[in-house]
Every structure is written in C-alpha cells, then in structure tokens.
Length: 294
Image 1 (cartoon, rainbow, N blue to C red):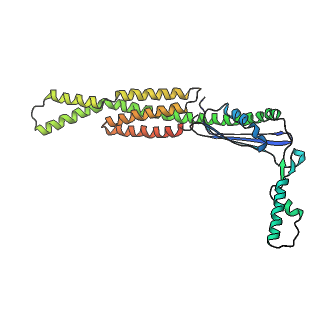
Image 2: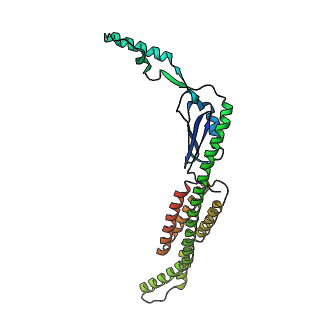
Image 3: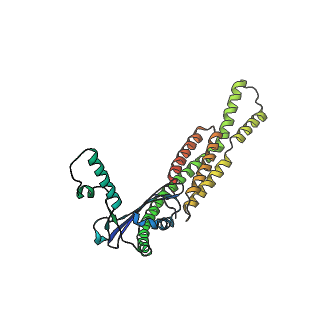
C-alpha cells in the first residue's frame, strides 16, 4: 500500500509510578533520518529505541520525543542528591567575593542552597531490560498511530495522482487525434503558398510531396506518444503496488518530462502546444505531490 511520509502518533502509559509519553511525527525526506529527544535516564536505550522506530519505516524525517512525568518526589521514584563539589565551589567563590569587597555579612546556608544545581534529581537504579520491554509496547502503540495516519494520507495522495494521470491521458489522446491533421494542414498551406508565389503556374507535385514528407518526418511524435502512454501505465501500476514507490515515480516523472518536452519541440500546431503546456502543468503538480510518497 502506498504511504505518505507525513504522520503523527502518540501513546502514553504508567511505568513505575510515572507517566511515560511517546510522540512520533514524520515529514518527507529523501532517506530515513531519526532524531530523538529522551530523558537522560533512557540514554542507555537510545539504540534500541531507534531500531524499534526504524522497523516499519523506509523513508522520512522522524522526530521522536519521550517524556517521563517529572512531577513528584521520592514517591515517583525521584530522589535528590547533593552536588557537594559544586556547593563547595559556590562557598569558595562567595568567600572570595566577601573578602574582595570587604563585606561583613555572613555566608549562610540558604545562599549556597539557592544556587543552581546544588541539588540534583537522580533516579534509583533500574532494571533496563524490564523497562525496555514495557517502553517497547508504548512505542509500538505510537508507531501504530503514525503508520495509520501515513496510510490514510497515502490513500488521499493516490486518488489525487490517479486523477492527474487520467487527465494527462485525455490530453495525450487529444494530441494523438490532432497529429494526422497537422500534416494535412501543412500540405494545404504549402500548396496555397506555392500557388500564390507562382501566380497560378504548374506546381511540381513531386517536389511538393517531398517537402510534405520531410515535414511529416520531422514532426512525427508517434514514438513520444507511445512512450508517454507507457509511462502513464507504469505510474498507475506503481500506485497499485504494495512497495515503497517514492523514488521510482520521481525518476519516472523525469522521463515523462523528457518525452513531453520533445513532443512540444517537434510540434508547430497551436492546439497541440496548448495541450503540451497543460500536460507540463500537471507533471509539475505530480512531482510536487510525489515528494511526500514513501
């Protein structure tokens, strides 16, 4: 099933008396790029978390955030530890400041206790294996939400892309129907022009036929039409595929652009030129849309 690279998933659970919240969002990207924002207490599990997130994904810029409820105290498994070296450093600096300014005030406990990071939150040792087993289930739930949104976005993209392919097929049919008349119209204009220039003298029909044949060969767009129609069929087949198709259809659009550019350069007919421009416009919209396909 074709999937978009845009999605969002969220899950939460209570682990060891704390609420664990997992949020994962994805955007389009040429490759798979995963960035994590996790608490320091989970840093030992960073590689496992990345592997778990990467399992169902092939492409996209993935931003995953894991939060642990910071409310509370020892009841939630949090403890405070004294950063004694830092407290001693604060005391030494305050003593130096007092002496330098010749101050008489005492250095009191609350002055030091109020300084940043004198008391640090710490967590008791944990069984990381057991924690990972529980966290993995929360990750799976968030990933399921992400993948569901990517599938639904993919379905919307497929409908839009299919409609544009159908429109280009109609435009191509119009060009194909017009092509034989282009040569006949050229022959008529050339005949009229020759008669006008020769003032009614005998026309060299063989020479006239030769010029028409040369024009027909130069303006023949049969190959371009056949190849472009083949590309349309391949594109539609890819949209019905179960594989990731983003890079494949991006390359296919390049080929389609090449064919329609050649087709436009060969044709001197105003109607065909107008239809070529419409096809190019649809291809530009197509290219923009497929950038979000996985």
